[in-house]
Amino acid sequence: MKRLYPALLTLTLPLILGGCAMGSLFISYPSQIAPVKQALSGPTPLAPLPELAGEINSRDGLLYAQEAGRVAQIGGDFNASQTYYQAAIAAYARFDDKALVSVSELGASAGSLVLNDNLIPYRGPGFERIMVHQYQALNYLMQNDFEGALVEVRRANDLQELEQKRYEKSKDAVKAMANGTVDAEISRLGQQAGGVTSSFLNAYSYYTTGLLHELLGEENDAFIDYRKAAQIFPGNSYLEQDLVRLAKQLSMPQYDEFKARFGEARLPKQDEGQLVVLVERGFVPEKQALTVPFTIDGNWQTISLPTYGPAYSQVLPASLTGLDKPLNAAAIANLDALAINALKEELPGLLFRQAARVYAKSELTRSVQSDSKKRRDDFDGAAVAMQIFNVITEQADRRSWLTLPRQAQIARTYTSAGQYRLSFGNTATDIEITPGQTTLVWAIDTGNNIRFYSINIKRKWN
Image 1: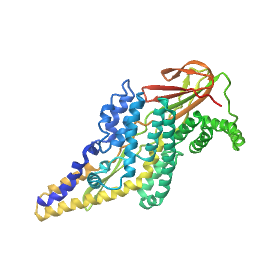
Image 2: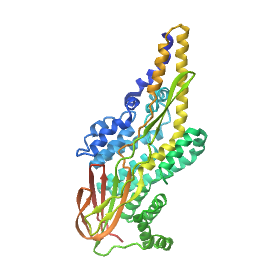
Image 3: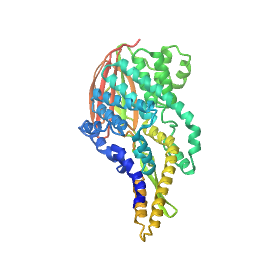
């Protein structure tokens, strides 16, 4: 029995050092977050906040900070959301700055080889980090802090450029680690993501940045960001009209080209105000587990990779009523496609860790079997237990930011000044349109509930 102590220590040490990471070790993260999403679809969206906030100092604190920030935001507590997102931003910064590996991280790394990737501290993919800054910008905006909002959207833009450079540098390593199985899965996920080819280029983020630039009188910067958004997500008529309008206003050389492609932009009349609507619908899909059993030297092993299920139903454009005529929103970003692409980009690295883990588990099993044979045990109970342990501990890492919307849509129009009751589905909100000013409405659809938040931006157009 003494010979088993090193193996048992190897197995149990990560559990001791893992702390709160054990939550996702045997119980999938989507199962844990399901009650939170249920609350967001009901009348008490802020109810899960204490529990989420209590996990911000855990190994998965970054993920819980993102979820808490989003929950508070959907519930309309923008100040609390700002605090939670700041915790997430600080966690990302610590990941960037950390040069030395702590004892607990050594335990987590070793544990991921023996158990599963859920012991690795969560560090979100690039698109999640970008969304933190975009949502932080909206927090500032809803609290009338326009300069703070502009700082955050600029950070989001900088991160998109940084993530693109990182991805370009990693392409060769990704190709080197891929094999037939993972190539097939990458191809399937790529088809499921449609025309989206990158997880970190987000038209919704660029559009939000451009909108803020324009509302603050920085039309040249707005034109640049609108153009980037249109390149990432072509075909949005509102975005195309913005490009024509600004190209004309700024006497850009692209004006004739844009006018020929998209038509002349409608300009506001003197007694009209502008309405801009951001619509967020549903939740991003949850990761599924793809588990494959096999044998090595007669011993059972499994590998379990995260993946996404078959294609999901189409998201319909939001139809807003209550104005002089219905206003139909148009998609500006499919965040489910960004999430799928993020996983596609990560799969080769996941496969590399899986191969190392299978080898480690196989060696542990053989060591136990060898010890049993030396003791001439008739029944190799320890080896059987090891095989069972190997199978039940192989759990796919299904962690991701699950309170993000599935799709973002936009709508933009000019309308006569006055009071309006804007309706979407069975929910309505009262808004005021003021001549020469902009009313921004943010509608968040969580399934059984639609919440409206609005702000009147008093800066007049030039």
